[in-house]
Image 1 (cartoon, rainbow, N blue to C red):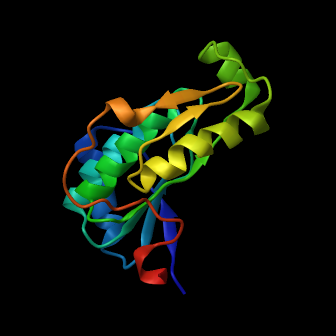
Image 2 (image 1 turned 90 degrees about the vertical axis):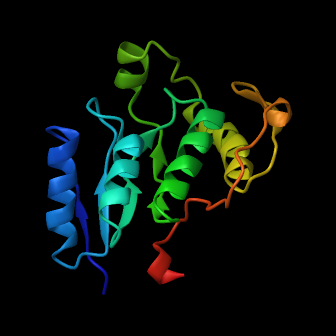
Length: 162
């Protein structure tokens, strides 16, 4: 059985890395963090992953509204490359109150929003170009150059489970 723990994101980046190092030393297989209002979770996990090479790192969850899917794909692929393929990307819609009252965005038709979001995100995580025109989201990545190097798509399961 694999055990995963929540990685608290309070404090300095060095304190988070120290916490992750201590937790990793216990033998847990994964560390999970949510994106609330503190440090950017994906960026922090990239740093943690470089310093703590023994655990899978997961987001539980990153809200989709404040990041366009092309940007989330780019950031997730960067973290995946930085951590040697150990990222499990968890995403979610957040809450209507946060989306509308904090970010000033529409929470109208959340299921449609997620469907369109995934229509852009998933192919990009596979290294594909995307041309998509939906009701609420649009993307055309054919004008962008992709970074060179190995592509490690964030997985839905830890590397040891594949």
